[in-house]
Structures are given as C-alpha cells and as structure tokens.
Length: 426
Image (tube, rainbow, N blue to C red):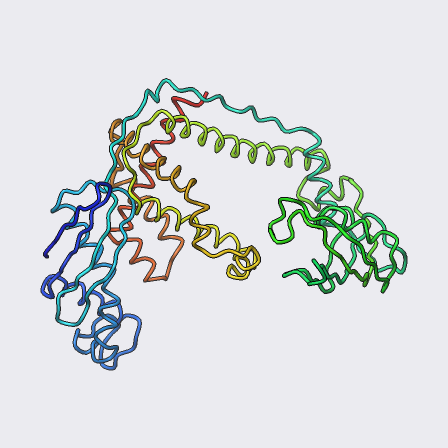
C-alpha cells in the first residue's frame, strides 16, 4: 500500500491510497464466496465454487464491485494508522483507478480534528421542565378518538360545521391556476382547520353540486412561497355531504378503545401523554445542555468536509421524511421552486451546530476517558443484526470495520450524553 498526503488546507488532509493486487486479492476471494452463495453454479455447493469459476460465471468486474467497500474500509483505516491522523467525521471517498490485475487507487478527503478548548462544563446547570398533563389534554385525545369512530351518513342537505364533505376546487393567482392548486373529490371536515383559514367555512350552506367563487389570502408563512401572503381566487363545487355522529363517552365505548371503563381509559391516556411529554422534555433539556457547553467552548477552523457531510446527511433525513408521507421529493422541491443545493445552504447553520456538538462530545469522552467495551459493541451489533435477518448484504455491512467504528462512536456519544445529563440537568 502506497499513501500520498496533501495538506494544503489546515483543516483537512487528502490521502491518495494505492493498493496493489496482491494486497487486495483476499478480498476478491471472499467477495466471490459471497456471490457464489447467492447464485447456482453447476457441480458446486453454495459458496464453494472456485474463484475462477465464479469469475467466468458473473464477470470479474462484478467481483471487484462486491469487494470494493471492504477493500476501501480496510486500507483506509490502515492508512490512517500508518500516517497517525487524528480525523473526525466520515471521509469523502473518490475512486480514481480500478481495473483487474492493476492497483486500486482511491482518494480520501478527511477532516482533521480541530483544536477545542472546553469551558467549565461541569458547573453548568439546566433545570428540568416539570411534566404536567392537564385534563383538557386528555379530553382532546378522547375527542379525537370519538372523531375516528364517527358514524358517517350521506345526506341531501346544506353543509354545516362538523360535516365531512367531498369537493372539487381550483385556486388561481392572476387568472393562472397555481401549481398544486387543484383538487378532485377532496375530502375534509368543515371546522377542523385542515385547509387554509376561511376555506372550509365557505362551504357552509352549500348543497350537492352547488358551486361558489370567492377570494382568500394565503398565510404569510405558507409553504408555497409563490402564493404566501397573496390573495387568490377560489372556485369550488360541493360534491357530497356526510353527517357525522360521534359515539357517546360511555364505559362500553371505552372498552372498545382498550380500557376497562371510561375512567380507566382516561388514566391510560394520561399515562401515555405523561410519557410522551417526559420524552420531549428530556430532549429539550439535552439540547439546552449541549448548547450551553458549545457556547463556552472555543473551536479552531472546522473542516469544510465535515459541514458538507453533515448538511447532506440532513438533506437525506429531510427527503426521507417527505417521501415517507407519500410525496415525491423532486415534485416537492419544484413546488418550493428550489434545488437540493438550496437546501444545503439553508441547512448549513444547523449542520455547523451538529458538527460542534459531535466535536464537544468527542472531546469530553477523551477527557473523561469514556470508552466502549467489546461487550457493549457486541450487544449493539447483535441488536441491529436481529433487525436484518436473512439479508446477507446488510449483515456484511454491519460487521464491516467501518460500520463497527461508526457504532462505537454512537455508543460512546450516548454514554457521554447520559453522564452529562446526570451532572448538569437537575
């Protein structure tokens, strides 16, 4: 293995790592074994076919691709040890050369650990927020449960507050229908506030097939910035009206909701709300605690690669949140008239806070000599492996050197935060 260093920037280092064929050959053999377990090769049991047979069956480059992650992980960490680099965060890896029987060359851009001067964090105090659930909160949950159990009947009368209706609508600005401003047979309950203010009330008094036009001003903080704070024209048509009858609050109904009787159901709801509030309060205290520690900590220059990496992680988290709601992320960005690089700029301030938080936790872990035992790492690994049973690729990734180092960091950070909370949050 040959390693070349580039240290043009004080906050990061670039390693160009060259691995010769003899060094990476064992990883190709293991990759071929994994591949041969998943394909049928005449005359051989799964995972037992010789390397050359597997190569002829699937192609040599497929074996290289299968082995690549493990090759990079191993030799990257070997290079880090060899060069005695104190890095932070995930490196940015670029493959420069990869061809059969030739050296594999890749470039790793690594953020260097900035110098950190901690303040007197042990003297900080954060007050716990008292957990208190009001009866009105329990009543709201009960009302929501009743609404979920509502009996609906199609009726031929004027719509009123509390009815569920279905309607067509069209929203225009300067006589042009806005993007996403059309709905067909759109359902909602009048008075629940699921639409913009004033929209639902315009259906009160309408009957089936009646149409209406009106104007409304969109909220200034509306997500579609093209219409936020602007007055738009609405054209609507009522298609159907459903009368809703909510069940009475009785012991019998409470049994169907999981309680022995109504008072028991109220008690369970209050316990759940208390646990939920306690969880949020602990999160709030934790954030406040870490923010106070950051404020009294001095940092040298933070590597761009760290901030860039964290921004992209936040974008992926945001994208997952949008797609989990059944919304196409690209369409969502179009409605906002944005590109992904716009999000990176928006997320940068929060990404810097996240990076500083990570650096502070790492520094405290070293100062307090908080380490992760093999037993703790094994328990966490087995917990994750139990969630991906029969997925060989995922199992291999979880057991890889890179992921194990990542898991160590997660466990260590968790331990640091718990110790800090015991000392600071009161």
